[in-house]
Image (tube, rainbow, N blue to C red):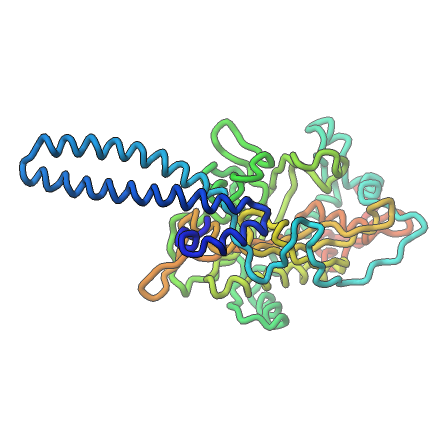
Length: 432
């Protein structure tokens, strides 16, 4: 939620910011008009209550009753105006930070860097689904029989690879020394607190999903139940609300979490895209990073989350590129965002292409205002800043590994860093 003081005092700044996100700037004028009426009615109610109190003290019962009727009528009007005011306020997205490139949509995202050497291809380079099926680690046909399209079974070594990725992340992010090394290598001025591991609920209340900023636009992507509970589409939707209504001392921050959960998405806007396989599915597992910090540290914390994502990709030795996401491609909560796209050599019939595997966003105080999460600074309180970042979206990382580590014989080498968890160096069809 945008700071109302900023809306009132710098409306042109807000208009410019939301326009760059392709949101109608007239919403600002609409809000300010209703806000003026709202403030005027509140003042009238306060004045009438003061008169009512004076009438009561003077034992003027009739006047006190008349004033009460007027107050009740104004309170009904106020509720209607307040509902409209809140409705518009919720439609206003977070403002992009000044460093974010201005652009209309994903075609104007900026590639910051490419890292890693793309492997030489074979005469015939297979995609992950063919390799997965041939080596008995992915089963789409049986999943379709049981659950329909956009589902898949991970079997045998495929399952071991998933939990190897989870173990790798938890081992690194829970180790203060390793976090300190990443911070030192990037020359970041940050505390080296490790990440606290969490397994969150995957069903959350509608009010919490709304507070995280995912209901005003994009609600068609979210699964819901008849009990007014919503299935998370990403782990941070359950982590952010953990501290709703809480106030921290400044020295408690940053607080960092790393969570594992299953996630669920309708994929309503992707009709006809990646319908077969495990790249774009309704259910997937994810390891997510989440940070709560002070406003002066949030942009640096964002660099840490990106650095961790890149560190993990480099450990797996998978080529990737980093994108600075432009204003028109930012979601409502994000003030800035980076994506990592892994090179997947089996895509496009063996020609290969980059596909998104990671993102990390700084939502500044947009979510914390809705959740009322603050910290004490001197004799005052401020809203915390909240950030999220993908450690591993498991399905997509498995795709990247399978395609980059395929052998000429049609087997799949296990990345060296995962071999101790998987218990083997090569995945073959006959292993299970």
